[in-house]
Length: 225
Image (cartoon, rainbow, N blue to C red; front, side):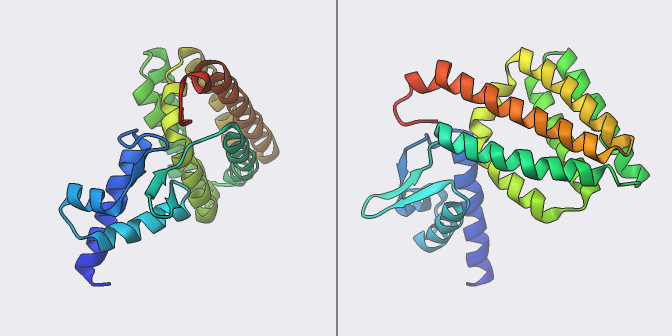
């Protein structure tokens, strides 16, 4: 593919992914390469290539003779996502505890402080941003880019549900306290304790998310979340 073709493919990829994650395209909605090509004023070829990338990432499903359907999340999907996150991110927390890089350690403490400020001011958007930064630093400390890519893809898959979930003030405060414990173990070099606390935190998030979906979301949606 030419350089311009590659650029258009990336443009289409970024556009469609953003629409999916931020609910511009609804769960279960069928979209076509012609539709997106018209929206972006580009040809269909780079759009199709972008669709294939998004299919590989679990964000689109190819339906013969119809188009591409935006994925929906089921309770089984949530189980799978968090089963993987518990294992991988627990391991990463343990690896991060061995990091002695003073700059990264300072950034981790700073991200935690930002998370606490956001929680105390009831700012869900700022809290979510601080949470992203905190976990990014943990991955940097662990020096495990492959694990980071795996978790980034899983987080994309449940991001649209996560926004509403994080907005619940009780979960923000509770999650902040859990992160304070995890970061404390990492900075103390206590790898096994950091791993255990990260696993317990993520298992709790998964269970609470499932309960929220069962009681407050899934009964009221037609195509899933």
